[in-house]
Structures are given as C-alpha cells and as structure tokens.
Image (cartoon, rainbow, N blue to C red; front, side):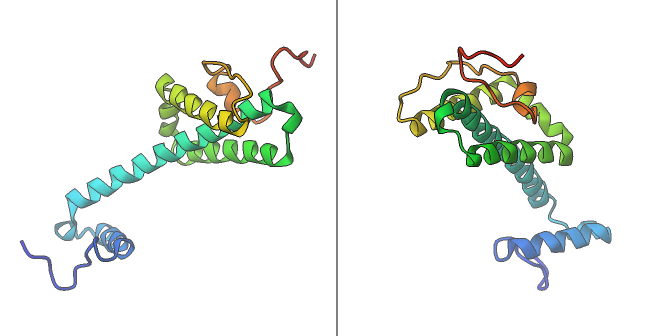
Length: 157
C-alpha cells in the first residue's frame, strides 16, 4: 500500500513524523497511523529510559565508591555529581514510577555496580581495592543524605 503524498516519512524527518502521528492520534485518525512503527518507537522510548536509569545508577555508584575509598580527594564536584545523579533518578521515578522495578532487579544493580567499580578503578589508577559486591542497599544508595564513610573509619554517633 502506497503512502499518501502528504504523509511524513519517519526516515526523512523523525521529529515531524512523531508530531504528525501524535496529531493523528488526537483526532482519532486511526487508519492514517503507522501502528507497527509507533509501537516500535514507544518500545524504544521505554528502552531509552531504562538505559538512562542504569547509566545514572552507575555514575552515582562510581562517585559513592570514590567518596568512600578516596576521601582525601573529595571535591565539591563529586558532591554535586552525587546529588545530581540522585535527583535525576528520583525524577525518572516520579515521571515513570514503574521504572523503579528495573533497579529492584538485583541483576541491574549488580551490573551497574561492576561498571561503577571499573570506572572508579580507572579514576584511582588501580590503587584502591573496591568490594566485590555492592556494600549498600538500593534504598541507602538513593537516600539523599547518604554519603559513605571510608571503610574502617569510626561511624558518626
């Protein structure tokens, strides 16, 4: 079946195609919708959100590790990055509450942690031995007030 002359191709102008499809949905012009393409793009959006979430968690974990295991190198930039990463994760949860299920998966946390260790190891030139498994729970990691203490240091009362 040939597309009408005034139809916008997603391959030529993806942004315009999305807006065109949204307009057709709004006026219930269902016959003019490209349902398979729309479904594919919606799945891609969900996948992009999951990828962003895992990336934010990896970045947060990497900075928490550096904070805990490299206290002499702490900086305002690290603090800002920790806050920004947590804020971005909480924003994703607020926008899409069901995405939290992605992080609840131990596999997602484990994968993000192993990548964070890799990143932190590079940043410390391999001079620091990080724990094999994540030393914090997800709730602790996402706690806005949590900044880990160096290992074997006295805890605050």
